[in-house]
Image 1 (cartoon, rainbow, N blue to C red):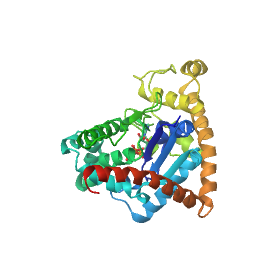
Image 2: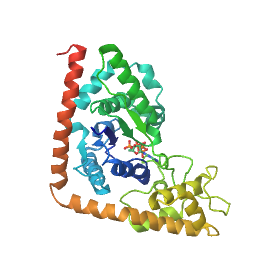
Image 3: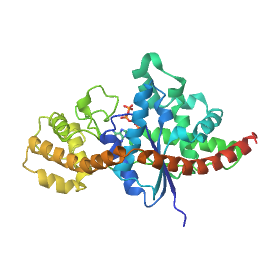
Image 4: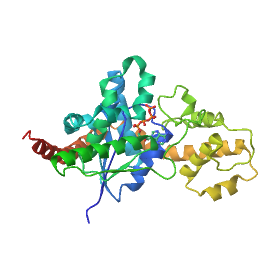
Length: 328
Ligand code: AQP
């Protein structure tokens, strides 16, 4: 039986954090053998907000390197840079022409990001979810593994696909979001009522994937807790709950095992053990990252192969779309 197709993307920004890893990348690695996978560094999404060109070039390489370092491999997955496959921009334009503005006005991420950007809200930022729909629909994607914050965009993608299919005939597969049961929304360390995020100004709020062990220890030591003493999973106690959830994700122990383990212990114990568990998880990833980015041309060769594979599939779908619309 043919494998189902998975597509997911990640922005080309520095400071990939534990939320990106536990909410998305880790699941991509674990799921990859079951599916036919396309993982994309979405650099065209990244330029919806201002970027310095040299920094952007370095960040594209960094994020691609992190995906391979985390365990995504060429035998099971196609990893590529979005702007290397031109079909993404072309399909986005065609989908723009059938997407009502009102649908985009409802997107909560646009509302949040445009408030932060204030003076520099580009058309691209508004249109971001249509480009994302093009990314997904080009590959006949069945499943989109993402963090909770992306659920609304995947739903919009289904709506766009349905509208196109209704107007022109069946072309697009309707994708489903896959949000992990635990880890879909990793919260910030200093502000555990908000998701861990790159654009958070307080840099101690996030653990970055390339943080050194001492930085990880220092950030977790400062994490917000509360005035209770018992170490238990409880969503109402967002700080401790978040630390325990991260501990659960990196150790893969059950909640009961974790609560038993920390019974009678202090927040200091929790923080120290969590820091060591996170360091242990990230160390092999960091080591592989250094190896594969240290060898000149190695990463670029993998990305070129990925782009060729992705392009072959994307062009077939794009041709179908052009024909349906009457442009061929
Ligand atoms: N805190 C999070 N918990 C779980 N999953 C998360 N993701 C992001 N933050 C969390 C998931 O990571 C994947 C890649 O995200 P992205 O590259 O689209 O970046 P983002 O969502 O824009 O990341 P940030 O840190 O939140 O950046 P800003 O601050 O710029 O908005 C996605 O699957 C995402 O759901």
